[in-house]
Length: 312
Image (cartoon, rainbow, N blue to C red; front, top):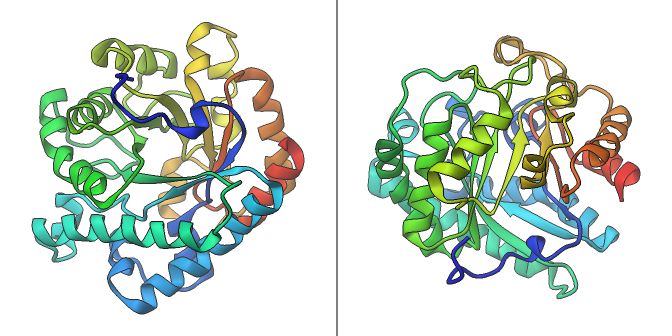
């Protein structure tokens, strides 16, 4: 990252937690209707903010009890122009929702009121498309132009960093990284993979990370893997090669199901939290830089607690 950007505390060492599957928890466990799986409208109402506060509470408590840091995500995975339009939001409205999402996260951070627990406000930038399939693609420049307004809104709201979450192909990841660099905000990139350990685009994980680094001058502060079960990517990270040092975070699914199977599911598959914790422990031996532990679809605070028991 350029020297002018502020240092991120989790790059200085130590373990950090993140939350689990926000949308799946709210929909399947809390019974909250999220059209298009979009959680960002919740920050606009008192009832929505209360639901989000209840959701994040156990995770923040776990971090405090474990005396580790926390990456506090904004609920803005769907808060880009295309998804906002489907929900009846104009560009100005969705950008304001991004700023308010950071302000909400900042209030949660302040309520912890414990200077020994570093909390990073992470502005989440999701894919323009579905997140499970590639669909229509953009060039790197198109992706940078498309995502930059959201990144700037998150920055202006006070985010410490932004993360490109559930990236399905390299060009969009590169565009987000370039837009973040131009906006003067640190950025992480998280790729998702299919059951064969490859991105939905068909590219292998090593090539995706190396190509993104090459196209951006290693702009991403680090990489993550999300929205896939450890069984899906264990072999992809088995080489012991230097590129694995760039992966600092894992946010795995609870379920071994494929993306297509999850998309068709009407019931939540929470898997086995204890087993998932053991698998995270095994991943630490393959990923020497791993220090951010969170979850994705189907996971909740029980899974994060089990990961803590196994890894911390």
